[in-house]
Image 1: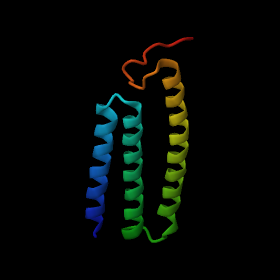
Image 2 (image 1 turned 90 degrees about the vertical axis):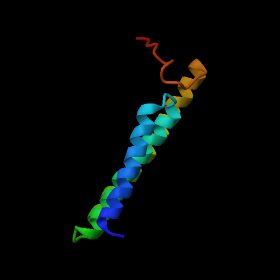
Image 3 (image 1 turned 120 degrees about the vertical axis):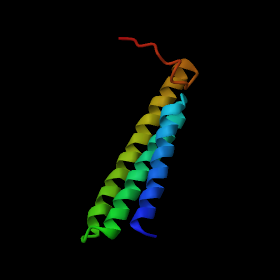
Length: 101
């Protein structure tokens, strides 16, 4: 595969993630869309690492950082979703508008 093919696959992944994050009101769908966008960024880093950068560790380090951020994001976001479900018995983002301060 060429760099352009990797970039097109990454564009498709990012577009699907963006559509999923913006169109769904379910918090789990929002999380999946965000993960797809992070995977598209990782694919971009690895594609440019293979075809453009001379040092192969640069892109791999960025991808490892993205994987770590994605794991932390999932852990925190799922705990927030569980807490919201216990409090409101729903994970629809449109129904979660009450703020207490």
